[in-house]
Length: 133
Image 1 (tube, rainbow, N blue to C red):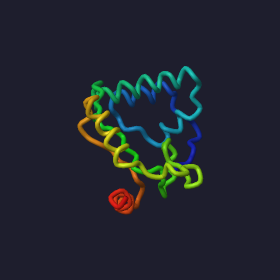
Image 2: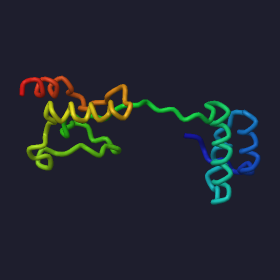
Image 3: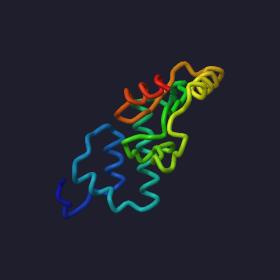
C-alpha cells in the first residue's frame, strides 16, 4: 500500500483525469479518501460514465433455475440464503427427486434454459446420495 501524500490533488481534478481516460496514481487515489457526500456522488457519476464507456448500458441475464440439491454445505459464503447446519435442516437435508423435477419444470415453464445446482465442494457425494435413495 502506498504512503499517504503530504498534499492531495483536488478531487475534481482527479475525477476529470479519470474521465479523460488517464491512469490514476496512488496519490490520486489517496486524494479521493476525504471525499464528502457531494464528492461521492460525483465519483459515482464518473464511475458510471466510465463503466458505460467500456461495458455499455445493456443488462444481460442467464435464465437459470436454482435447484439447491441439499441445504448442507461446507462453505460459509456470505451471500448464501439456503445453507443450513444439520440441526437446522432436520429431515429437510436433501431434495427428493420429485421436488427436483417440480422446481426444474417450474423453471422451464418460466423460460429457464439452464439449471444451477449449488452443493459446495463435495458435489459428487450429494449426487450419489440422491441417486441411492
